Amino acid sequence: MGLFDFFTQDIAIDLGTANTLIIHKDKVVVDEPSIIALDRASGKVLAIGREAMQMHEKTHDNIKTIRPLKEGVIADFHAAEMMLRGMIKMVDTGRKLFPPSMRMVICIPSAITEVEKRAVRDSAEHANAKEVYMIHEPIAAAIGIGIDIEQPVGNMIVDIGGGTTDIAVIALSGIVCDQSIRIAGDTFNRDILDYMRRQHNLLIGERSAERVKIEVGSALTELDDGPEDYEIRGRDLMTGIPKTIKISYSEVAFALDKSISKLEEAVLKALELSPPELSADIYEQGIYLTGGGAMLRGLDKRLSLKTKLPIHVADDPLRAVVRGTGAALKNLDHYRKVLMT
Image 1: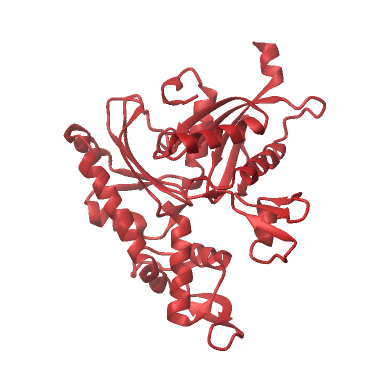
Image 2 (image 1 turned 90 degrees about the vertical axis):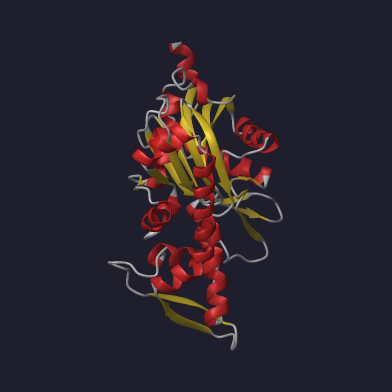
């Protein structure tokens, strides 16, 4: 086994629509945006991750930036494979002479199809993986926040990522009922973008919308300690001249209202589908929020008002899924039941 270990490296990957995180030897070694910049003529990779994100929406005709994942699944197979290879190269395995073969655990949305599953597996295999295991995101998130998933106790996880929101009730190492909706971080960005265009005649880019969401994003129009107004720059649609305006968190809450209502409906639907005994457990345990979307101000309060249940936001919700994926990789035999090969 020692020799096999020498030639094999274990890595856990959270291949997300917005960010890709990789754990190697119990440490998060890669935390980069899921984006790649290519030369149009030669198809050569120019940049991956943060560097490519800086080029996004600022490129000329010879360069194109691609986000290979849309709504939680691989939309551009070739770009996803190149991005995955590039990110794996960022992992310092300590050996330059013989690149090690990889054993990978990758997390996937709970409502993924067989075709989409195969795309993830093929991308990993082309990126030098000898063994590929997959784990559902809500289960990985539950492991990542320290829930013992093997107990006969119902736990509800709401994982709000970049492309999808996965809502699942977990008990006895399995998903009892789940809802997966394509409303998540990217939808919030589009809502902000549309609101700025409609309300202020201001055309802004995807990155600026993301900035607004981070700086003054809110799910409630009234917060106890709301952030200061944020200054946003863009192009005036009437004059075509660049201009700047200030936007408050209340406006952002108004812009996001429709999407958050759909998210609330999905949570209520999942609660409706759960068996009565598990409902009793959820009443006691509450609902756990993970993923980047869990950091939206006031979202926990709003969901709590809607469901009348306690809502717990995970510590470091962005990394909950990858931490759980890493834990599953470390104890492969223990978590064999929840892993798919």
